[in-house]
Amino acid sequence: MSLLDLLKTISAIMGMLTVLSVIVLSLTLLERKFIGRIQMRKGPNRVGPFGLLQPVADAIKLVAKEDILPTWVDKVIYWVSPLVVFIPTFMIWVTIPVARDVVIRNLDMGLFYIIAFSVLSIVGLISAGWASANKYAIIGGFRAAAQLISYEIPIILSVLAIAMLAGSLNLERIVDAQATKPYIFLQPLGAFLFLCGGLAELGRTPFDIHPAESEVVGGPFVEYSGAHWSVFFLAEYINTFAIAALTTLLFLGGWLFPGLPGNVTASGVLVFLTKTYLVVLVIFWFRGTYPRLRIDQLMSLGWKVLVPLGFINVVVTAVALKTELPEIILGLISFVILASTFWIISVRMRTAPKPEYTVRLYDPSLEGLNAR
Image 1 (spheres, rainbow, N blue to C red):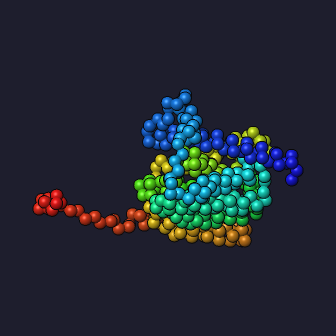
Image 2: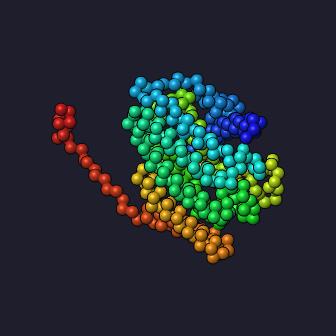
Image 3: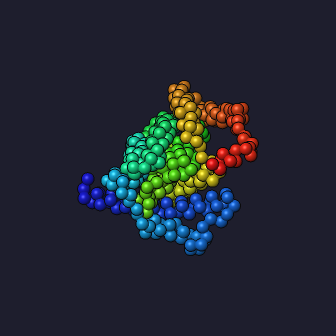
């Protein structure tokens, strides 16, 4: 690589970091406004017109806030852990296209690169909890490892089915293969698996187990504050946008839209951002409407439901490709499996035995004993 190419790559990366930072600011405002509407309140409306400067005020507060370092932490690992979480989150954007040829580096093994890099953030979460030397942080780190490793499997299986349909791991070729119809019509089960696994990877409601305030205070981030905590916060929202962007590319046709030319950069970027922000609203909608799962429910959902469904989806896709079934048949089979899963879960929930509670009546004779 020449010096000029190196300078171009560095400038592109810095530009991407700037764009992602602006996107994170927009996502924080959008989330507050959207969930405010769900909960019948206005959301931020004091800082700037319509509250538009609230994300800027939050960013200034986090940067200027005192960064407290507990005396008992392992300082080197404590400082490095936020970067270990953030860098893989940022690096996957190197090969995510937002329109045709609008990408820093289009890789033939782009999907493989994204999956390989995304799992590295698990190390940062574990090391953050361990370095904090706090029992709640350590428990949160172990929870994060168990959750992320478990839900990485459904994501990989759903991505594998898409790669089989497109015959490529190149994201641009996968989008081109959806020129006639988005893959969500052929893989509704795969889209469900990918979105559920993505929510669990993000640690967002209803999968926010490792930072659960009511159980482990703040998870692996409990001893972090100020700018170092903001790095975890930044990584979470960049990951949120990444999951939405990959959902758009893999299942919603990316920058393609009927009636619009797919090779025009401006219209492609607009279509891509519109679809991606709609997926982001779905993610925010889950947070505003669903309660947190217990950790046993979360692990059961992953290993007993999503992982088997992922293998079923891959097998069905392979059989359909081998036997050259019509695409509509593959879509119907995938939809029937998904609908049957929801029906079985709803029946199990309705017929599950209700927990029994013991009610203790007030006994005045115990007053003296309680007082002593």
